Image (cartoon, rainbow, N blue to C red; front, side):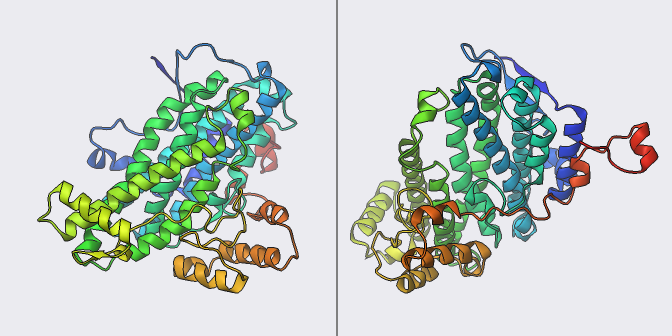
Length: 435
């Protein structure tokens, strides 16, 4: 298949570049040192890629059925929000990496997330027929996407601050894994521009997963050898923080049928969520195997598997390795704020609690200490307390999470987002023209 490379119209392209200067300040460093870190990879370029040759698809938004078009428009906006939102989260703790390679890998991932957001904006702007399906102009849609900040994005996982570089890595391993599923499902989209956008994004998403998995493997080995920098307890609590948000990104377990019926995705929410959960379980097992083999290097692979199986079966200690020394996937109903298990008092291992106070203490023991002091956790506990006290319904609590707040209505680069036009009229007045 042939790949086409295109750019946004100049004013939109410049707006994304202005946004990038605020949220990826180390972008120039990445490009200057690209060949040193990624000698076999083509240099990054901010543009939209379309893999041509995907047949039997609808090419214009106006040819979609009305319901299809609205679902797809929402999906494109949400995808853009997640891409830009991820960058805003990663920048908080990027400088805290202990390893230069890990830091540069995350920086490359951030640049590619920028390109993914750019790709979604290109879908909205290139097809002029969207204008007949929404009351928003292209200017409005682009500015909306670039104006969102942490706590105003469309999905909960992208409204949570990072507290350490462990968040950067575990987020890549778990939340970018959801991204892989979403992109793979959108590859069969009935809308040809969306389907043609996915192959390149999926190839880049594979690197994003590696950005998370490779350091986690290394950390598990180091923890087994006694290093104290990143312990399995720290990793476990960070997994507990993010995995539940990843499960919720698939949508309510009872939904997704409309997208399947309209040819926008191949699986309902529950099926995709279960496949994701199974894949995470395999990742956890791989990490535990590396821990066991580092602690017991004299064992062959098959013998190490037997040791791990005994530990998992009995939740005890085998050859000096305790069940608590390893990583485990929390129960899928634990710490949920969306979907069927939302705001239920289900514990980490699937146990149930009778009181809010007992459950809050349970969460304290199973989540990172730094996260307990966050606004996100405070909001969750307030909603949960209100549900338990009968002061609000689960449905109302779900609708209130996350709290969608615009910070001053725009991002710090809003003057650039509003595409300052260097023409005679704007120069004469010394200001920006209206968008």
